[in-house]
Every structure is written in structure tokens, then in C-alpha cells.
Length: 595
Image (cartoon, rainbow, N blue to C red; front, side, top):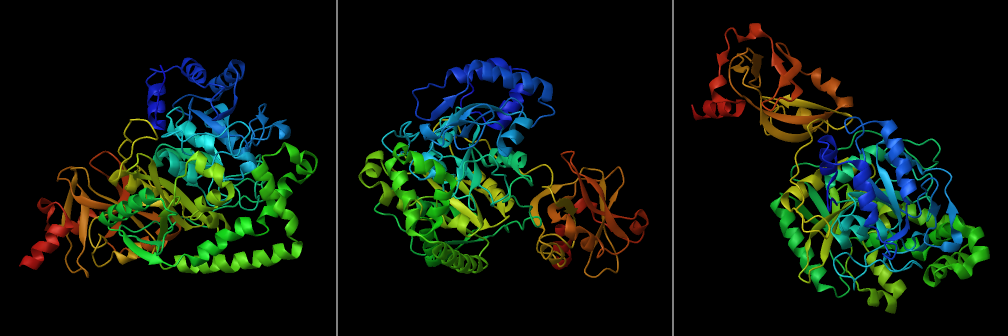
């Protein structure tokens, strides 16, 4: 049995139902990985797989490990203990003595590594062709590039072999391959995931990234990876819970997008904008001049010297063993002095501040993941020029300290994928993922290059970390007089739903504005409520505003979930009007207006 295109939930369900044996399933999956496929640099042996399976048996079960027995692959600039790390340069090869922090965390969650994947050498490129192990072809059409530098990791997911993989992202390497292969690419805020155990490209900018078939799967893997790593000098702790996007967000878009002659991408972009408008998204054209100026600094400025710093000793002795294009790029480091580096850093800070100020006028940016999708032949004719074009909307993101999420956005008229990327300030990863769920629900995609449809998305059953899920029933509902007490605390609307049929609703007398009282009585009917996620840090100040006889308790919803919510003292029912039969507070207010 070969689970092609399975999502994480399908793997978990199969293991929980004991319809899948990890040893048999993963050995069979391993047998499908062919050494001649340029996606792979190293495929683990049967003995190496057995060693991981033996460890898995001691770690836990499908009930205790979130990624129990789930296979994944790792870009070959990320260390896996006991396996060679090549960074796509055979002369550079070393055997890793320990797992990169990200790999260690995934293994601890139950995931199993099956292979190391191909990349543009030393993670320098967005094309997926700069490797002595071969160019990795696009999963839809082998004449086209797969994107890089995380080429093998992206194709491994797009072909349905793996539910997720690890890549890295310095200039777009975790986003461009996602856009070119119809999958999700999660580029976290710098420092959210540890980069300890990663061969640096530009260490101050590098991120470990995630490729997955769905937003939910990328989010699940991110939950396993995010943690402060004191051994990583660039690891950071999030400052506060994220501010989620509103139900009618404002997205900044390029006022003058570049397509470099790719009319299929331009057409797909215009269709995407029309679809976004149907989701009540306000599209705000912005001048992306500072973004383009910052992007040009990455390869046109002294950040190539940071790439040189990562491999200076190796390059001194083994320059002839490197890919010619990669070597030519990194050799430019010799043009820059320490003075140049400081001046460029000052310019970066100025442009980043300009970009961050511009982004304050909108909730997030949305851009084409790449302006064009070139053929392998196109890249061979102009390897540096085409590569530069692909980074138009990606190169500035890490320099400006932004978070990003690449999403599938349909199939172009020529049968190739088109993708978009959401970009937010640092630490807005969760907000982008939440909108990604909305996008997947509104514009569902096939899973990678398979013929399987993406599963429908549902709201999370509980509040994200750092939030309290609260049910409101009266004056705090959307559009009601006290709703601002939620929105000014950065609370996020989740859904409208109903209580269990054990509640009565009363209109309390002498309250301004009018307020209801919800009382659990063991009889009654389902009452309409709204669920909001409110930051824990703001919850106390919100509760302090609630007057007697109201308070906060635990409500049971009609699907069995229990959440915090408004309750009322039973004595308050005396002299109050029973409006249970109306089913909700809005109906009562409308009835008052009608009279």
C-alpha cells in the first residue's frame, strides 16, 4: 500500500485505526524512492529506517505523538545525525554528528526522515538547476524549473510522496518552489524556528521553511518546530500573541506588477484578485519601489559576502569543485569592504523602516509568488538574469523582517501552477495562516501535482496558544454597541454557532445598552452565540468591564465543545423577559425596532 498524496490527518487516522503499520508502510514508501531521481541526494538505508522505527516504538503511540510515523524529507543543507550533508557540493560533504534542532524536534514528535533532498548548491538560487546531482524538474511539466533552492523538498511533497518536507528560505527558497509546484510554503518569522544545524547561506537572514499540501498541515508542523533555542544566536521569542486579520482585510498589492512576458501568470493574477474580492478583501495598490530597492541589495550588495563567510575556508581550497554560477555569485564578495557592509546595513534599515511604515496602511501584502515560470532552457540561456526575475517579490522579505505564506492560486491556461504569497510583519505567522485557511476554503486546490482534492478546512476546535475562546451572546456581538470592547483588545472573530439546548435567554431590565442574561436551566433551546479569540493578556481587562449580574463561566455548545462565555445569575431572571423562543439577541433587538 502506497499512500499517495496523503495529508497529515490521513496518516494519523490510518495509524489510529491500525489500518497502517509504520514498518511496512515506510519500507514500502522508501522502495519508491529511486536513486536516479534528481530530487534525492541521499536515500536512507533499510537499516537506518529500522533504527528510527525502533526509536519510535520507545517514544510513544499515535495517541501521544502528533507526527507519529509520518515520513518527511530534509533539504540537504540541514543536518540529520549520521547522514551526510552535502549542500549539493560533493567536495563539501561531512557526516552530521547530531540532528539540526528542527529535525530533532520533528523526530521527537514521531516523524521519520526518509531522504535528503537536492538543492541549488549552497542554497544559492531560485531555479533548482544549480546542482551536480541534476536539475530537479517541475512536478507538472519536466521542461520547466521546479524552483529553488529547495527544489527536491518541494517536488517530494508535490508528487504526493510525502505530506511535508523541510526547506530553507533566505531569498525565497521556501516560497518560489511552492508556487511552481502547487503546494504551501511557510516562511516563518526569522528566529521562530531554530537554524542550528543548517549550513548557512546568509546566516542573519536564513529561515528553515516548511512545504506541505495544505495550510493546516504546514501549521501543524510549525507547531512542532517553533521554540526558542538558546544555542542559536538568532533564535527569538515572540513578543505577544498575533493580531489576526479582520473578516474584511485590506491587502496591499503591487501597483505595477512585473511579468517579464509571462502572460499566463499575469492572467492568473488577475483572476486571483477577482477571487480575493469575493472574500470581502479590499485590494490597495501600493508603490513597491522600496521593496524592489531592498531586494536588489541581497545580491547586488555585500550580503554576498555573508554567503562567502559561510564557506570561505572551503572555497579557498575547493573553488574548482563548485558550480560555476554559484561560485561566480559568491566570488563577488571580494568587491565589498567592511565599510561597504555597514553602509549597506544602514540602507537596509532605512528601506525596512519605509516598508514597515507602508505596511501599516494595510493588514498584509499579497503578491504573485513569482512573476514568471521559466523553462530549464530559459535558465540555461541566462542563469543569473532569470534567477533575479524570480526573486522580484521574495528577495526583500527576510531583509525587512517579515513573515510569509505561499499558497496555491489555481492552474494557469498552460496547465502550470500559479501561486500567491501573503506577507506580514514579523510574528504575524498565525494571522497569515488563518487567512490561508479562508483562502483554501474559498479556492480549494488539487494536492500538489496529484489528482486529489484538498480536504475542506474547518475552524480550529480550540483557541490558539495565547488566546481565550469566548462566547458572546448580546451587546458584544458583531455590530452591537459593546463589540468595540473586543476589537480594541485585538480579539478575533472565529464563527457564529449555537449553545446546547439547555439555556434560557432573558432580556434584563434597566440595562444600558440593553443586555441579555443567559442562564443554564436544563431546559430551553439552542441560542445563537459568536465565538471570539481574545489575547490572554487582554482577557482580565475585558472581564473587569462586565457588570453584575453578568459574569464569565463555561458554556456548552451544540457540538459538545466547552468554551468560556457570558452567564447570568439565576436571581436576575425575576422581572426579566424570557426571550428564549427567539433563539438569539439579534432577533430580540429587531423585534424592539419593529415595535
